Image (cartoon, rainbow, N blue to C red; front, side, top):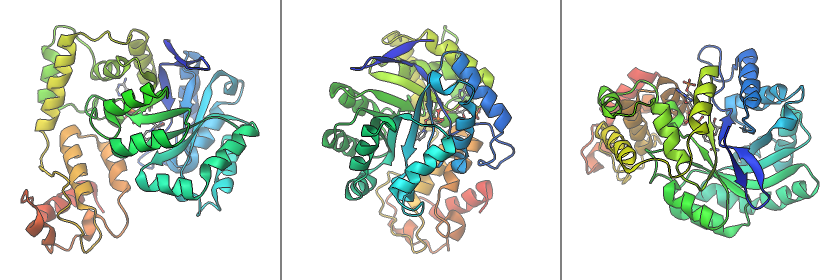
Length: 377
Ligand SMILES: NC(=O)c1ccc[n+]([C@@H]2O[C@H](COP(=O)([O-])OP(=O)(O)OC[C@H]3O[C@@H](n4cnc5c(N)ncnc54)[C@H](OP(=O)(O)O)[C@@H]3O)[C@@H](O)[C@H]2O)c1
């Protein structure tokens, strides 16, 4: 296993980290973790040298924390850095920030969380975090020895990222990064910005939640095949991320032992700056090919909004495009499940008000129907 140092304190973190948002489940119910298999997988990864495990209050409906906590019994807790996240938007329902925090410790059944993140920061959630004095509370928990480093995970635009980095003395952060998202959210520019400020960066979604490795479109598979050096799509994608020296650890949500083995093998041999210009050019061509598969040329101008039924039309169009580009059933279903009840494609009343406003003349109501046909209600 390759390790990278967490500066300035110098802890050695494995370049492959284990995300527990995509543990093996039984059937289609994402909350029904296959506990035996998941515990075996987590312990296997740790035995092979993975020493950073990441969970969150909401993963698998709360069961990720519980199962991870069980996996870390029998001496495994001492072998890893444990990362968990505070979903501030759920705090009220959970009885407040403190109650939610305590519930996480109960679920995990641990005394200490090494890396504690404020989850999913966006402009508005960041505002909430400040208004609800979450950080002074976390500082107190740190002083009391309950948590280690304080960081945040991020899902908004680059300028918001920079603002958040600059407004608090964070100890680390977590961003989404893969070769399709180099200019999405924080992206490569955010990675470099954080690193310049001395902030270690944890990467999530290096395989775009599995979309870059499953059910490849023929044209993408042909491009990978055309290159003289043969690598799996997972290897190309993980190597692309590992090539950045600014990356501390790369979290992958592995659900099979074979994936753990493969990802360890890949990252053992991926040193920063090792991709050649030809290899980077190939990855650039693959990225362009995926973009060719975009079906609805939505620019997210939001002229279609507001929808009388409250449907977030640009978001549904993005999901529609993602489905056509990557054909990832599990991830597309998961994303579709995040749409607000009462404001889903099935609630479209076919009024076509959005279509009248759309500068791209997109057949939005047809797309809504196609989404219902594909993913149900
Ligand atoms: N803070 C946040 O807001 C946030 C958001 C997203 C993620 N995260 C964290 O970051 C972690 C990593 O993100 P991610 O789970 O999206 O990672 P990812 O590596 O992009 O995607 C994981 C999926 O890729 C597939 N996979 C992994 N290795 C593979 C291999 N060698 N060959 C083929 N398929 C492979 C698996 O699909 P199958 O399961 O279908 O086999 C797995 O579910 C999450 O688990 C979570 O802990 C945090």
